[in-house]
Length: 412
Image (cartoon, rainbow, N blue to C red):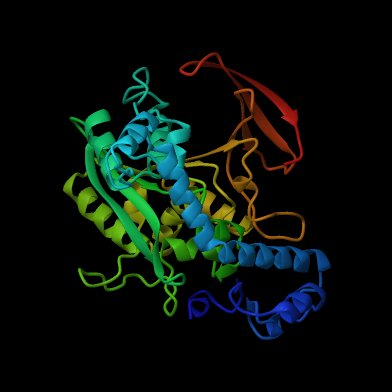
């Protein structure tokens, strides 16, 4: 099993298994290793009631979500069909005795996320070479990652004038389905090129994806720290082998996110020694964007990490413990990687999995925080846990902003 690859310390929650009595024991018995809802080393006991309660809540919420998988999916399908219907055309067709439903694979079909914000054009005031360019391109790529392949290809090719490289659905070995989505494109320049990988986030009506966000499973990685189990599974963790250096992939094999994207990226980087790449994503996609360079580092792919220009995440959940954060900060420093984590104040996902004094999941690095009044705050965490530099960003309109800085103390 995967835990053997990482050592003897792990905690895997199994919401599909167990019954009411196991839920009762999960909350009131410290013998976690004897519970059907958990997989962990023999002798694992959790003495803190508060920590057992958090695990209990995680299992209960996951069970609720998984029980609603099909109803949520159907509601999502109907809702998106309604969003994409032209009411006047629909009524006209009904008078003719026809019922023509929108094609969910067409170039004009938009997801729920796409209907919330229909902009696809890039900001003409932010061009290549501008310090804001990578972030602006990343947020748009993260946004359209929720769309179908035809929509993404049309946007990249015709709106952005860039090269579409592919949109993919990847196999999750634990869920036993294609549930991880990502796409790649290339921005070619005269003397260099930029390759971007954008991971899809948590679709609003995908119970499996929400269950992954809520999951509190983790694996101990030697010399790294504890890493979120659900996100690693989504990226390509193998049931039996964990994270082998390579796996067999071919036309008749299931395509796994990390391994397929790594090989495609390796081929393109070798074609141009000046090429760089960026990984980005929103919500669950942000977690995968952070884990992708982690596995590259774990496999000692130093030359590829040297080509990594930046990691830009939006509404990213917590991925690992404090030691994992220190490991990633060291890797990003060694390979000169820009890591920017953007958070909206009312977004619940960056607060998942729940973290307090007894839990292990921690954010790391700087945070670009926005409140509901379009005021931003960049928190630069110092050596002292309670001190940080705050940069206030006041948005004058959709396309311009001013910046000034202040220093103050706040509990992080």
